[in-house]
Length: 214
Image (cartoon, one colour):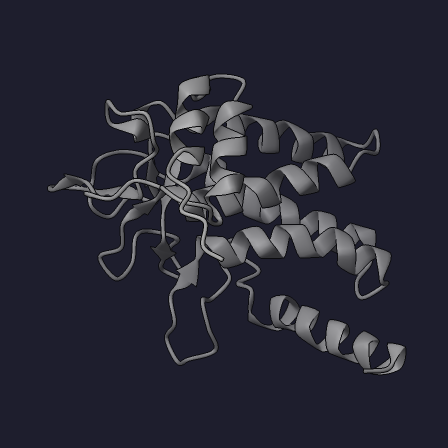
């Protein structure tokens, strides 16, 4: 693939976030299927992509700031609690959310790994938008606040490793994050939490569960 072809692919891929995102709340659909719910992982990817888009001149810095602020403001103010139609609980968020209301969709679980992708995206935006303006200061404040609200210790459910998630009415899922996987970002964020950090033993328990194969 030539540099020109790669550049075209990058721009068209970024276009997904420009075209499909709900401008009212920052929800990004999981796919282009009709009536697809929003995915909090996709929203995290969008938050990471906006700074890249600014650098590639796919959108202006001001446009990116507006998109990021819309998203972070929504999640900060969205309903948190045990109600089955909330957006999240204990700082975590449901895997799938309604594109219009931003509330739980498809009976999905409160997802620890997808919340990690969302929070990582918020932190990327907070690091990139570093100017001393009212809007960019708010981005940094909201990103830090969302990160601090996540209760990683609660998600351990009394064990060392972090559970896959939780559902209202039935509680924690039976599985924990074990073995080398995308959970690296989850444990890194959990260990570095400024408010509810995972204990060192959590990371040790996770790495001890690796099963290497030749």
